[in-house]
Length: 135
Image 1 (spheres, rainbow, N blue to C red):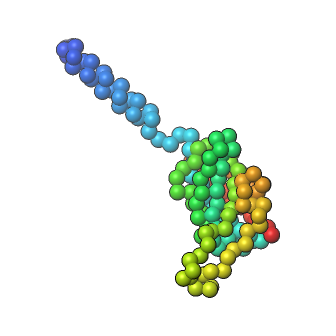
Image 2: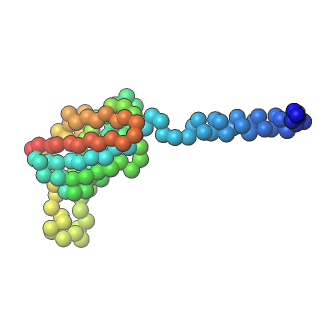
Image 3: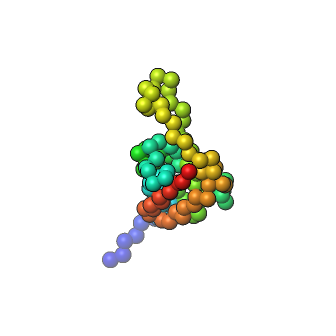
C-alpha cells in the first residue's frame, strides 16, 4: 500500500528533513581541539602567569591563566600551528599580602609570540602542550 500525502504536506516534510540534516552537519567540533598543559621556568612549575596561543595566519589569539604550572584553554582552538607566549600575571592588588605580592619574572623573549620560539600544533580532539622556559 502506498502512502500519499498532499503536496503542501510533502513539501513541509522535505523542508523539515533538509533543515535537520543541515543542522546535524553543522553540529560537532570538527576542525577544533582542546589544549592543556604545563609551563615551567628553570624546571619549576610557573606559579602564576598567562599563556597565549596566537594563530599567525589569522593574527588572532587566545589566552588563559597559568596556575601552579598548569593551564587549560577555556574554549577550543581551530586546528593549526600556533605561536605561543607566556606573560606574567597582572599586578597584584595593593591589598595583597607580601607573600602573594611576589612577582614571577619571565624573561622578556617569552612574552611575545613572535620572539618566544614557543610553538604548538593543535589537532582535532585533546592536545597537550608543555612549555619549558629558561632564564
